View (tube, rainbow, N blue to C red):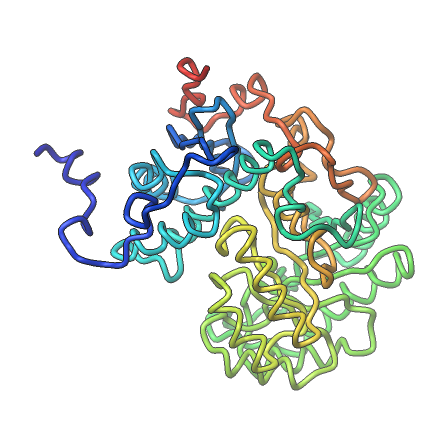
Length: 414
Ligand SMILES: [Mg+2]
């Protein structure tokens, strides 16, 4: 056995365990539309504002599903690792295949982290694929829709990110020129008052500077847009509480990740200590990691990242738990149009969706990656086309591959 064979060998094959493969479960594929098998799984990394990982699942029916896993090293390798567990399987069994992969990848760590991210990309591709096989939009696979279009919030940047007036100017521009009514700005920007950043303490000058950014931006757009502010896990517990209290009189849509993500009790204390809405969630995986956060009252607005957290059904499960606690969902998103449309399909299918993030307005060619124009005037109109409802433009994809990547090999697809 050479090194490659050793890596691709199923490490669980020698053990008696919970095996959810179709052969082990004795499932029949010989009924109507179920006569179909997965024949291949491939990935391509795109050089976007993040190295997006696109996933394609191929079938013997010639129908292909496209998904996206949250960017990051090792994700394509993990997807390749799962190929043998998918080939020959029936793509119609999305839930079972998801559980099958979680089970098979337990040795690689499938409770959280990159393995869940890799599975997310496959899970999204399966929704695109099954939607196409059945001739229905992906949201229909999730139980139908609550809305025809999904609100998108625009993550905004300026070169003068620490200048409150420049932030307000950019907010006005994005509202008036790009048509968004929902924005987000970074609040972990230099103020000139910094002391020791390692201790996560906010001194009075830093708090005043952040309040001024919030004051200028929210005053400029007023009723034309809601504005969230992201702290990227920067502050200690007491500083986070002081900041959240200092902005209570302003129209803050939410304050995101004011404290580091590891300690749920501190997160809950900060959230309960203020009427400023606190959002978090992009660091967490699967419904299990979101459940305690929501149940403990640790979050006012939950922000899962769909192509990272476990995919479309897992995000729906998170939304259901959140809904039981009257918590809305604002999906974190830094994906290409594929992952973004997957998020929008779920946002259409859950009652408590606030908005889906768009993080690429500076890129220029984001929407060129697909044949459609997914975001128009700050909204994603949910397509009635089968599956996700967006199609990759292979010529544009070829122009933007990560160095060393090659396009999907579809020469053999019939
Ligand atoms: Mg964030």
